[in-house]
Image 1 (cartoon, rainbow, N blue to C red):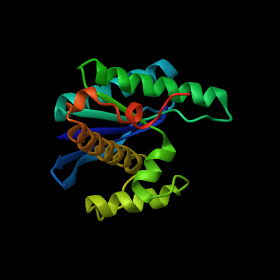
Image 2 (tube, one colour; image 1 turned 60 degrees about the vertical axis):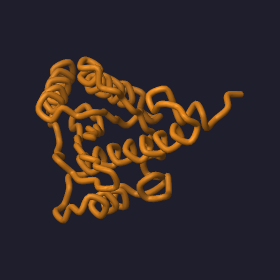
Image 3 (cartoon, rainbow, N blue to C red; image 1 turned 90 degrees about the horizontal axis):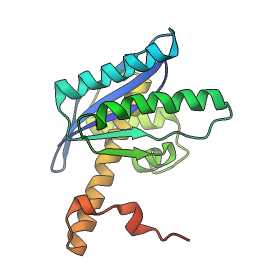
Length: 180
């Protein structure tokens, strides 16, 4: 299975593609999409086209992206949301399943602590994927998102088998938590 992780940003968007074969996970490609500092609609177009190109080239099975976190700056949060939307549109345009993960959740899965520093996340990404060179920060975050998705998918598969249902019909978040 190939998972494309995206760390959205309106200036720089990180991407990371991992391949999962049983317990073996390896990085296929990672990097940063530089949308620049031009007009905002033009930057969204760059993000959409670049993510579409990655999907076309690598044909991932699943897509994972960081969810928007609450920001003190409303304008920044809105721009981040629009950058996410451009990337998500590229995925749903070709019917890729999309997983969304909060920053604390990603850190919890990779480091064991939701308040972990970015450097700790990058270190764990390097260890888990056997990458020895320095990974750009946004790309490391994207690989972390893909790894979080893989971990969550594995958990959903185990849960689905345990209760005798097919994976696509099970949503771990719905099964594991009751609404109040």
